[in-house]
Structure formats: C-alpha cells, structure tokens
Image 1 (cartoon, rainbow, N blue to C red):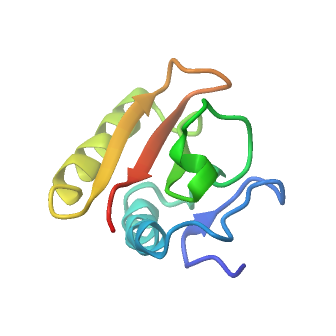
Image 2 (cartoon, one colour; image 1 turned 90 degrees about the horizontal axis):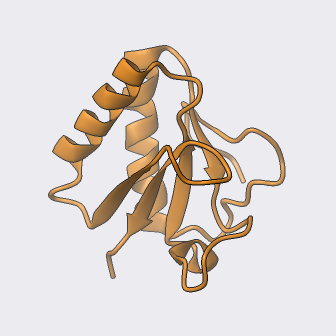
Length: 113
C-alpha cells in the first residue's frame, strides 16, 4: 500500500490494507499537519495487525495506534489539542494510551458508517 505523504509505519508488520477509507482519509490530513508541526512523519504503529483486546476495532480496520515516544510531553499535548479541534466534525474517537502496554501511543477509532 502506498502511504499518503507524511504518513509512515515503523516496519512491514504494520497492516494498513483494509483500514477504513474514512479513517485513512483523516490520517492523510493529520499526517500533513503533523509534518508541518513536528518536521517528521506521523507513524502508525498498528492497524489491522497485532494483538488487541477482544472486540477491538483494530480487527475490523476501524482503529489505528499512533507513535508518541518520538515526541516530548509538550509535543504530545499539542498533537492531542490538534486532534481535539479536528475530530468534532468527524466520527473519530481519540484515546490517550501512553500508559497502556505494549508501549505509549494514541489510539484512534473510526465510528463512521
């Protein structure tokens, strides 16, 4: 899968094929903003791959995890603010999972049709 400009994965184990097109469209826009703010790609660490809780939307391609360990706490706060301003008109849920194993990340869920 060709990724939109500014969007990256850490390796070929991350599966974005089959992720909901609405979520991928949102990520495409977010990646451009992320690149402008932080000067680096937005890294998706999990899509339809990996081990997740039963009933997780990852399994249906309606959730992704975003890397945070490459940012300062202030950068993460800024990214969360950007997400809080950009998601009210879009059916996206954002969860701060910096304290959830296997590692710190932000979890995004698509709740659209």
